[in-house]
Length: 200
Image (tube, rainbow, N blue to C red):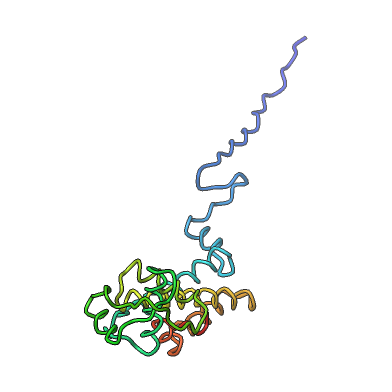
């Protein structure tokens, strides 16, 4: 008796092993390019983007307020009081009266022999004068020195405006628009360059 072997049927081809490369996900889908993935993550309403945009507008405001801040090289309006009171507070601890031609001496670079030993009349609270004194200590007793504190505080007001408008509207774009409107507002721009202590 002859036994016949069953006909040999070839085994089905093995399914090729799927390899996951750097350009595909585990499920086999292609991985988007890095710039496409980053674009999806940078959302305008992201807190980091909101802060970065507000700080950018603030730096623009600071640049505009520091531009030619030392000109005119003269005492403008109430600077004649606040700049000298701030210097006096810084060096004597209280506001002293000054001689008649104090402005000319100070603008010529002289700060000795300008103040008397008698106190000056105090009109406003001294926080603003201390900020002015900080600028004078850092940059000297000149127009840039007594105006720089106002420029910095005026620029910080722009940041506050950006953040406040963003909080109220929920939109970074509207926050930046509000900050830009304050940045280019003529009155705020001018008052950011003059040391006025009326608001302190």
